[in-house]
Amino acid sequence: MVYLAKSEASIFYEASYSNDNSLFLSINGDNFFITDGRYIEESIKNTKNCEVVESRDVVKKAKEILRSKKVKKIFIDPLEWSIDEFDKLDHLIRIEKRKGLLSKKRAVKTLEEIAKIKKAVEIGKSAFDKFAVFIRENGFGMSEKELNWKAKEILSSLGENELSFEPITAIDANSSLPHARVTDTKLKKESVLLFDAGVKVNGFCSDMTRTACFDDNFHFGYEQKFKSKQMQRIYDIVLKAHDDAIFTAKPGMKAKELDKIARDIIERAGYAKEFVHSLGHGVGIEIHEYPTVSAKSETILEEGMVFTVEPGIYLPGIGGVRIEDMVVMKSGGAELL
Image 1 (spheres, rainbow, N blue to C red):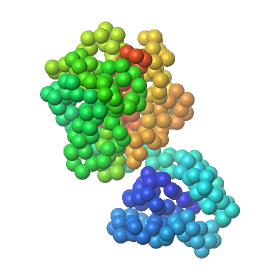
Image 2: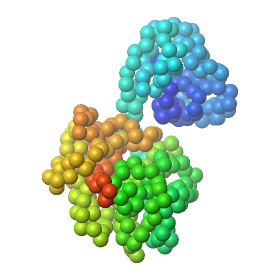
Image 3: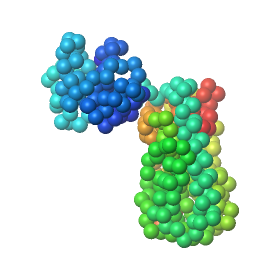
């Protein structure tokens, strides 16, 4: 098979290294990592199982290699290419588009990859615990912006780690926004705080969300007590949906069947319209990758797949709850990471 990868995630998966100007070309097992002079030393040192090729124009060099090897057809993932970049390849050779060409390939993780993800999850959980202590001791009166800055400091301080994504620190009514941006809203006694964050370790991501009540015993554990009966009710519903989905997940079931388990619990409680996103998504080199665990996904959940379980209920102007954990599918079911 001949394929050309452009996204950093796909290239990292194939070559164990990537940068912002490279291509990975595989011609029936002969692999080429094409990049410019800025990255040559790093590429030679860090890539695996490929020949490093230097060029100022990586697409042009890929064409030259394809011509020299007399290749007649290549596969690409169209989601990785802009129209302009695709035009540079077009008319050169027969191009077959295959969405998710490499993202599906890396959906089932190896034991080594699962160990790296588990390490990222462990460091992420440690950061949550450390952040909870900080909030308990210093959080009163701090704004979402201030808490967000502190969260990023803690997340990145536990080892030499990147963040998986920009953390979400949403207080009270802002927690009804699934991807809330930080504001000047301040933390008060008995405020609701939704915190969503993760770290990247050895190239692999973690992702976790907790919703908690700010009081003298503030923590990010599952057992939470809210002043508002309405918030307590939706919290308990989301926690049940979270727990039941993880307990019920088995290899061989469709992703949409798992989504339905959580969604039915929330729907029966009267909040169908307030669960506005899918149950989960794959996590690995990228924070969002294959498989998607949604109401429409026909994907069969296989052993070795790593994904999130993150049901939520969001009440505009009032507040929201999301509880998210990562699991790996094993032969006996989903295992919390």
